[in-house]
Image (cartoon, rainbow, N blue to C red; front, top):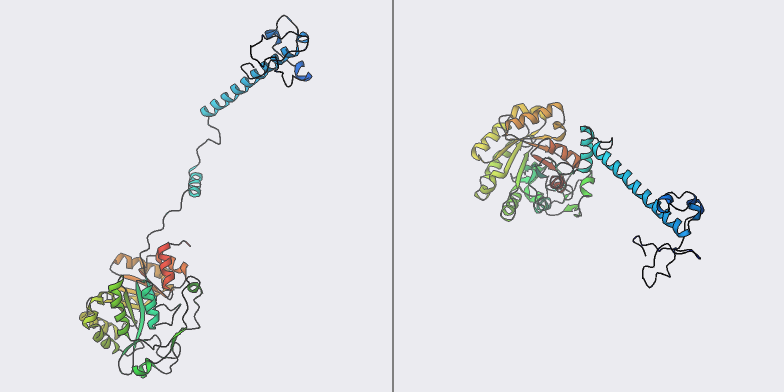
Length: 390
């Protein structure tokens, strides 16, 4: 076998042009195929290898040698040609090598780079009337579930019973959320605590209900809770978990003397530790704003809030610490301007209600709101933690 690994053939009756190489298998090695007729007609270089004899006089073995020599020369030529192409490509940039325009480069980077992180969302999630999407609103169970879900705040409404007990109730009347009848203000506490409290079947909580595996509780039979009971829950919770804020909504349809009862309750020593986390919200300036100021002078660690529509903001601008507006008020041009002014003031917080859809939460958060009140606080907390895109 020669250096190329090919056998050296010889034709019958012809002397082998190559000497015996001494291998014990040298006489047995035969070339498996020889050049075809078309190939032998085109053999070149025979005059260099065998100058004394014409091509027609060469043996098959000699013709094979010439053929292999030509193949080797052709291979070298191809390699040289490729080398030249590579050299030219390195020296002369082609269209494919040209640098991308800035816009194309940006598109390429966008397609390969991870999306930029979203701005931090530091807003707080407040459970509207506790956890109204899954449990009867303003019930003890709704507040217990909100606290166990680690919400930042709970929002609730208060009214006075006939015997001046501060109770948790949104409507002036009992029919929508309980099995009772009549006005809360005309009912004694002994009656209110016996009522069945149920979810409002008219409200659509589809976004919230599809989010968690939490069971939906339609009704509870432990009556309308008092504000003191809920504040007791919050006080105990403060020792076991992160502190929870309480937003107390005082409707302008209530008896204005409810503010006096509120001051009396909050002045109890057992609530001193949670006063800095309690917000009192009112709707009307006339009559109510002086009452709020009186309460604030007595308990200066409280937070003051205006609840309502954007049109009343000028009346409260320097009188409160937090503005709680309906969510759509923040989407108008004047609402956007109000957000800018509030952020410039720095000491003013902004709250939106009632926000039950993820895309609304994200938009409000991106606009810089501080609190989002939702019937489904679990959804609110998921939006904040996952920083979902829309």
